[in-house]
Image (cartoon, rainbow, N blue to C red):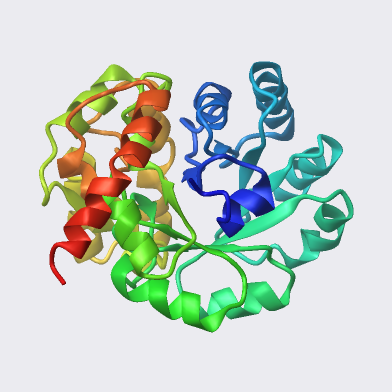
Length: 314
């Protein structure tokens, strides 16, 4: 299975399954577990200082000899130093978000790193492929955290038709049905964040996981549109306060201040009412916590049934 898959060939991985690069919880524990299980584990650099990232990379290298990646948030104040660490440590794969990695592309290419940006539009996908991207992650607005404005169902096939590199689908994918649907849309792999949050290896606070277990299909909301950086998370006291302030015409500075430290409060301190619980719209399907290896085995093992369901309808 997947012997001819272009993503598996490109990255030398067993399954075309990426773990989303999630800030604060995309740590060495989770990334190494995903890589060891045959997928691509990804450290979420977020706003991580360079020394902290180097430490996480070393921990991953100690725990696995399989390929892994680092997700670099290009709006990070440490982005140049972080990219320097990535180059020095010869990280096999880099995924990027919130910008154009063009200025870093020559140094990454020189060491053989595969660069795979996360994109939310066809125009951005085409521009980054022209700039040397090895593949792209087409992420729909169903995903958790920072989102675009196009759904996965609409975005993926348009990106597939527009570029000549492999496309990984992301946003609203958490099981074998979602993976089969992504393949049907023309994608060559999937990226999942929310599903891996609900793994035993994810270090997110128990309260964070518990509120997700209780989530339904309409439990998430989007805030931050007035700032130009919309974020999907579970509705709570913080999101309601944010919405009230947005409606009242609060300044960008006031809104940004409200969000400072809110993700860490939820992921590490367990304050899921006054912190940000980033999770995708697929949260209503996340009803258990399993080891990473079991999650991946279940998804891959269920693909045959998902395909049979497709065949049964034509």
